[in-house]
Amino acid sequence: MIKILVTGAGGQLGLEFAALVKDYPQFEFHFYTRHDLDILDEKALGIIADEINPDYVVNCAAYTAVDKAEVEKSLCYNINTHACRSLCNVFGDRNTKIVHYSTDYVYHTCLGRPLDEDCPTEPKSEYAKSKLEGEYILRNSQIPALIIRTSWVFSSFGSNFVKTMLRLSESKDQISVVYDQIGTPTFTYDLAIATLSIIEKTHAAEGGLKLFNDVYNYSNEGVTSWYDFATFIMKMNDKKTKVLPITSDQYPTLAKRPVWSLLSKEKIKNNFAIDIPHWHDALDRCFKQMNTSGSN
Ligand SMILES: NC(=O)c1ccc[n+]([C@@H]2O[C@H](COP(=O)([O-])OP(=O)(O)OC[C@H]3O[C@@H](n4cnc5c(N)ncnc54)[C@H](OP(=O)(O)O)[C@@H]3O)[C@@H](O)[C@H]2O)c1
Image (cartoon, rainbow, N blue to C red; front, side, top):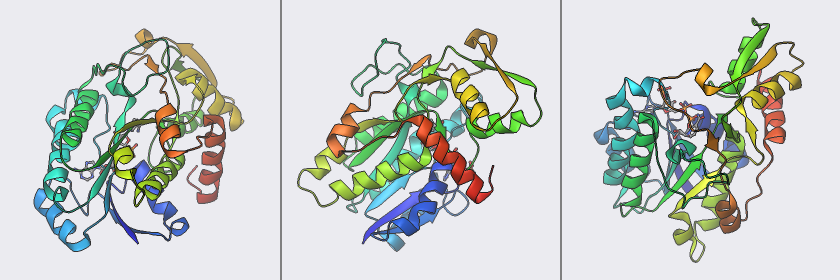
């Protein structure tokens, strides 16, 4: 059995992995929330590493409060950057591989075409810079690391844009949402499934390690703006709340957001033979999951 240690197991993505356990008997999962394992604590990481000796660490732990990161800079860098070094220190000589998630924010460039993994990175916020530096640490280490840059993550677990829109629809007649930031939402279920599929396909395969040890983009298929995303969420749930389009200038935030987050997924699709669902389909499945679990 392939042993997988999941850090940050109490977040959107971590909880999604936990919900998938029953579908993946070929994996032995070990889940650690921040409460159970603080990835800033290298000693605690070492104890868990000795106990479990995982084949893979799937690092779902992250500092994701993008605006707060502009003021809580050191905490953000500790979690998103320095903890990557701790993971390498602890797991580097154990034959463990790391799966790590990064963000579309590292590109922050508008080329007028889908951004591929070789596009220049120009992170503009502290969050984005901390994530890119975390990537560098993993890529410059000896430990094999699959780095997945993802965007606009939504889930039936945790908090996210979809849930915020549904919550606002309970009290607001109208809301304003930016229409000049373009990208693609990512359903945690599809991202988790893709991750497990990659691990399974590359684990014992000839040349698998070379494919694994690289940077990949992943989001659902399709393209939208936050305004269109919000409009679609309301429509799918028969909500009466009117969504008004505004520009980013009309909605200033502490951290700068990229206007262009359209990710090319050619590399991940070609290297691992992955089918990526459209975000409409993903959102539909997310709502079904919410209704089943009562989290809506
Ligand atoms: N959400 C997005 O839209 C988005 C977009 C692009 C990329 N990503 C990336 O995708 C990955 C997964 O994101 P997500 O949406 O699942 O994030 P999330 O819901 O914020 O989950 C992150 C988890 O990490 C935990 N954590 C924070 N500091 C920790 C520490 N020192 N030790 C252990 N755990 C710690 C958090 O615990 P607390 O809640 O207790 O702090 C939380 O449970 C992240 O790498 C993120 O940067 C996310």
